[in-house]
Amino acid sequence: MGTALVTANKSIADEYVRRYQQSTKNAIEGILNMGEAVYEIYTKFKLKELSSSDLEYFCTSVNLDSKGSTFRKYKAIGRNADKFRLYMDKLPSSFSVLSNRA
Picture 1 (spheres, rainbow, N blue to C red):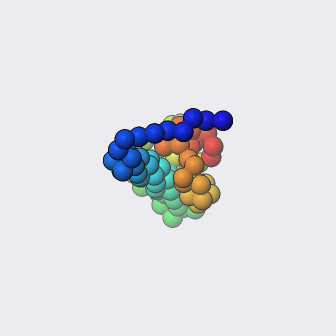
Picture 2: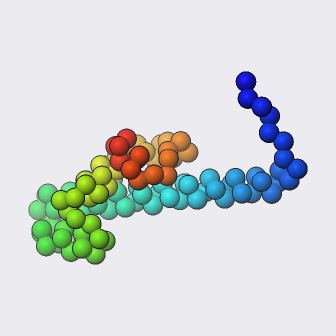
């Protein structure tokens, strides 16, 4: 059984907890949004709605290599973004961990 935590300034500490948790949620949402962008443009490229030069323009603009592991990881995250959003409060705010769970 755990030990109860006692704080002299609980309301101040709670504000920092809230701020920290909101920042984590924002970081996860940002990773999911980037993943969705990569997945969507890649899908449009595969469906021939966009050319390879369009895909390369995107990748160059956001500093990604379309054949690199970071691109593949973002693509996997984007493909699974809706599932991840169901568990936002339990997800780590780490790109690498999210990509491994995708």
